[in-house]
Image 1 (tube, rainbow, N blue to C red):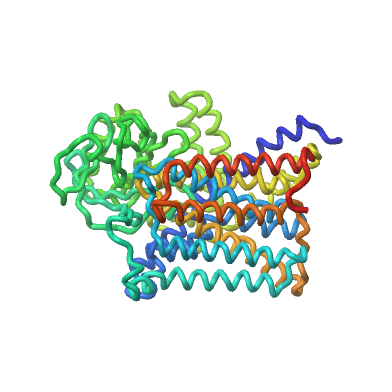
Image 2: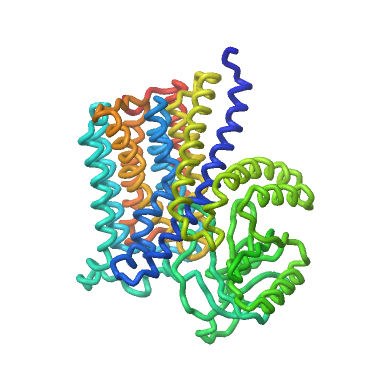
Length: 543
């Protein structure tokens, strides 16, 4: 059958399905396995291993795999399939991260201007600039030599070393230590101890998204959980203060308005599921549009746990689905059946079908190593490997679908699909997670994660597949004569210069609200320019 525009458009639905599949693998298996590793490092008796459990160090190393996994596997698979979309996905993700994620984070930040941590920000900007220079150097002759790939990969090790010793460096130079008033609470503990409906609980907040380490360090801070029929409030029990409007907040959040999701309260109307886990753990799943947050409650006493469940169901008008966690395909089927029998709108029921297809496939193959079942946390390496396997499969299918789109719509080359459609699809969950972090009053952490992700995108997502491929082919150079890549590197440089320029404007090392819409607008301009060049509306900026 010859090319067909209708068939080409239908393939877009399938490539969107692959984006969801990649995100679900990361959210349900890849990131949880990484978090188990990080937790083990935090609890280690060795202080050098403990540092690998710190947010900054873990985020620059193993958590970078969770954030950049889809891009890395897409680049790796493209080397074996000969697709032009692989490196385009990485370059497109770099531009998306710096413009869209930083722009939306600034726009969603509750406190402005947004103060940045100077030393980590300067470190990440310098290494991002270095990664751009090295990438340009490697692509200059339109092929990647073995030596060039190893240089990029070695730079990843240097970056990780610098991240590891950043705190020691800052402590040695008092002038570099930030003033307390300028530091935002980017590493506040996510575990709180207090009472909810009169029951002693420990609460852990889990944000769903690859851009964040799903749960932070534990803490012993006491919180009063004011669970009312409207939702769940929280306030520190260690600080006596008069309760007024915006001084109240949900777990880990600071609020202004009363109606915004994750605003002044986690609303019971957004509580979709109550999942009964092992070890006295109850997961409250709050879902509103694209935002998904889990409150993990730990109640060791069985009687108190039953009392808490009764109160939650009473205040939520028994609307959420209460069930035990099942790591097998039976759990996926029960979720689909519940969705179809619920009072959810037709669109939600329709979306439950692709969710079941992916969730069922993953549960069928990874049920024995699912670390969300606390009894299986010791199997986290197998869960990690299994998630990488499925990421590779879905990345391969995404590239094959991109080939089909190009075949049916020849005006859309693979390079264009990679640098735009595939880059947006693989990076969009990061944008949602960053907005959540900004609403949680952690916008500086979201921006730091975006910059760190970009650095490791070049040093890992590009260099590691090149090294693996060349080791298997005797160091043979890799041709990289992909349309638009050199111009993409130019855009990477320009966007970094723009962000640094904003940082140097008064007030120094702070980002004002106006910068957010500007960065988003620049990304839209980038899409227009790239599209115009692809459809030959105007000549390319870089030949």
